[in-house]
Length: 214
Image (cartoon, rainbow, N blue to C red; front, side):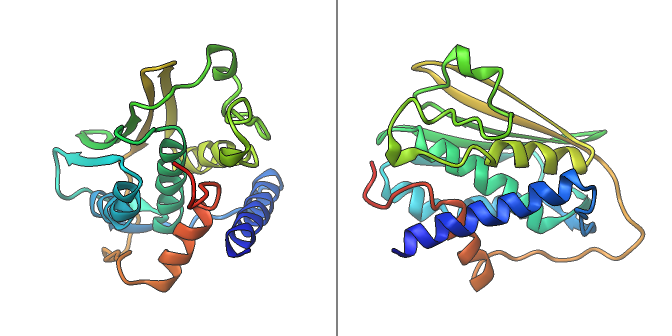
């Protein structure tokens, strides 16, 4: 029952945000943050969940600090959504790899899995609204088809781009490029760990993954 409530909440939240984006009334709350720390904390906050499903999680970065403007809550949502997709399609014994690379002009984020991959005939559609790349598999992993469309919109609102590569039986990687920008304010410390709101957001974003699933 609780899982279904989280799924419904996720759907409603996504629909509201998509409607706001379409109406150009969706706003980012940009702050100067250490975005590397944000991505690392978000990733590690779900490590137990991922590893309990028999999936290996690896986080790697070539830089420990990169202060740039971002909406930390939206970055959290982007990362959680991509991790959720990776978990859904990575079998027990597989791996998920989160890599962060520094660039002079910004930051490069790569989330990669060695799961089942996306069929070629679906790849041109995955960022389209209501496209369910998972519908061809099992209802256990079925989503609303909004998540990746919203992720793309959130990345682009940050001035960035998102691309992907996938091969059946090999895996999928999503790559995000975010430009380096700063707003005129002090640096804000982000902390995901121990925050009840963050835990609820994990439950919502991971609601498509049934706890009884593999």
